[in-house]
Amino acid sequence: MYRIGYGFDAHRFSEGGKLVLGGVEIPFEFGLSGHSDADVLTHAICDALLGALGKGDIGTHFPDSDPRYKGVSSLSFLREIVEMVRASGYEIGNIDTVIVCEKPKIAPHVGAIKESLARIAGLSANELGVKATSTDRMGFTGRGEGIASCAVALISSRSE
Ligand code: MG
Picture 1 (cartoon, rainbow, N blue to C red):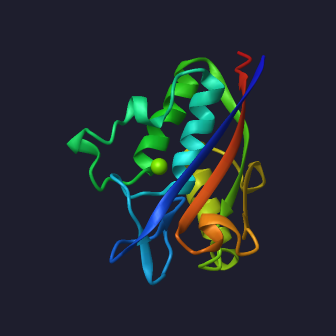
Picture 2 (cartoon, rainbow, N blue to C red):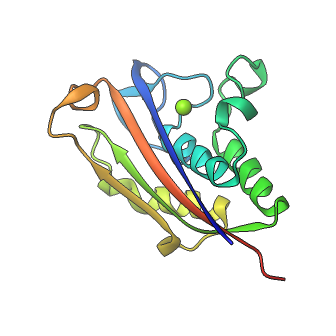
C-alpha cells in the first residue's frame, strides 16, 4: 500500500540568526526566525511524512510552546518522524522538495543538503530531490522577506 503526503512551510529572515536548510548551515547575511533552528526545508519534509502517515503535523508533535525545542536542530524532529514511519510498518520510497527564495543561491549547497537529509531518511541521493526556485521577485519570497519550502513524500507498507 502506498500513501503520499505534502508539506509546506515558510520562515521570515531575521538579523543575526543562522540560516539552516536540511541541516546544513548556509553562509548568508540573514538567518531565519523560528522556535527551533527554523530549518524551513526540514519542517516541510516532516509535515509531508506526517501527512503520509495521517498523523498530524510538526506542531502537534513538537509544539513551539515547548521550551525543550528551543534552538534544537530540526533534524532531530525528522529523525523521530522517520522512526515513526518505520514503527508504523512503512518505508519511505522517495521525497521531493522545492526551496523557494530570491536569495541566497541554493544551487552550490544542494549536494550537501541532499546528503544531510538522505542520511537521516535512510535514502540514496536520487531518492531525495532538492530543487530551488525564485518567484521572479513576486510575493514575500520575491521581496526577500524569507524562505518557503514544500515537500512531497511517498511511503509504502513494508513487505516482510
Ligand atoms: Mg516551520
